[in-house]
Image (cartoon, rainbow over all chains, first blue to last red; front, side, top):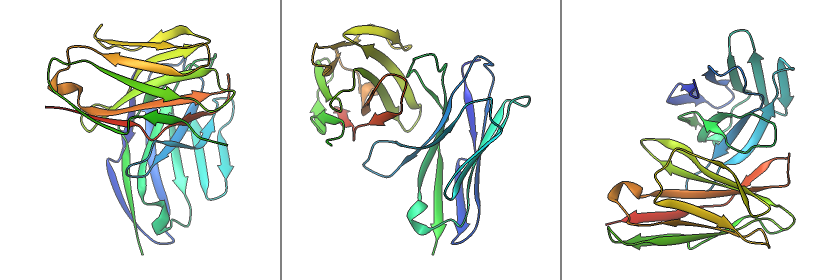
Length: 113
Length: 111
């Protein structure tokens, strides 16, 4: 019940295309859903995050869509660029002051120039 | 503003030894959490500290321990190292209730 399932494992997208990564969770007590981006040799960096009282959040080219009833959320990267090539992790936590994140298994994105 | 600093960046240890990893959080951040990252298991939560108190602990054996000092710096210790402990150990700091910032990690190799 603590798992966060992420798909796909890897993704290849043409420059300018849309990258879509999906995550599903089981624990309805999760209350905070961040997405992290990780480049090789670096630690993860927060990209965008959402709480379940909102169905969509957009920041620049990055959008989170959240479906509370289906217990699913997804990251959309619009106008994907080669610089977006990285590994993306979704996560979930009980937001009441904890940083105990349950991470998805990661998606390796490659954007072709 | 300096980021989260983890030392050392790389470490090679022998099975059975113990190791201590250090994390200096961003100035003003009092919350520190630790994660283990491996290709097989991904990112797994180890512990979380706030004001020198452990608030949460992940599902790791007792060989993994940690602490936080009064200046918010944190250390984690792994005793009796096993080959399977080879991983990237990540520390994250945060100002309570806000975004968690990760360091670059310590790459531990157990031989």
